[in-house]
Amino acid sequence: MTKNRRQSGTSAPGGLPHHQRLLDGTDWASLTTMSGTGEYLPAALARLLDPDPAARADAARNALGEVTHQNTIYQATVPVALYVAAILNQPDITAGDFDRDTAVPSRPPTLVRLLAWLSDTACDADDECVALGERHHGERFLHEYEEMRAFRDLRPPIFSAVQPLLGHESAEVRDAALVAAIPLAEHPLLAGHRGELVDHARHLLAGSTDRHNRDHALDALKAWGHDTSKLENPADVAARKRHARLRAERASWGGTWIGGYSEDPPF
Image: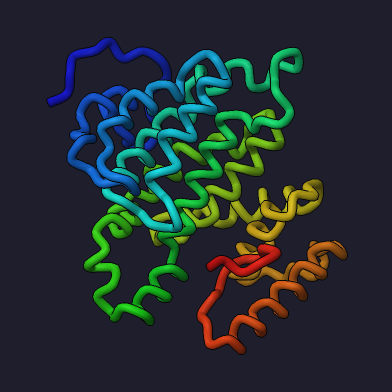
């Protein structure tokens, strides 16, 4: 049962429950994580809104690391994703992260870290992962993988929380929001938003040198039928060739790796 607590701050967008309701109304101890159950999660998740950026960074490690370990979606992953989406637009989430005098260059802002986690989780549940699962485990793969199916069903409300950040004043946040929005937009109900994401992807490619972000933007444009030849720079071409070489080497080993442009294929 949800406790009666004062709920302050910005409301969650797009039909998402308020973050405090999610925190108080979820039976975390009954949900599986990598190393057990999620009884520790409420305290860690609450600290994601701590005014101290260092405390938020520590909370992100504790709360997120064990609910998506090795590309696995656990029972606790879904409510954690909902909670993360529900706090993305809370003012406390950026406290101290964008102040030039207090920001720590080696530590990404909490907002960027949370968006990256949502992106990674969405990629772990994307259509390519479903196809791979069905190829290895049969056509009932998604039906039997309840946690993945639950996350996929919640992509529209999660997207609704990410979308406003596409216009954030920080380019780092805008780019992280785009990379998170791309796999979420695979959901059929979000097809109409892909045109907006195309514009953001082109803008990212015009100014960003981040390999990870550029790869995601280029892959999305290609998947949606756009010619990217004029948007690629020499580093993009080199990464594409390296990726093709790794794919060919992996195929020669009899493997099925179909991942992105990482330097080494994941195992």
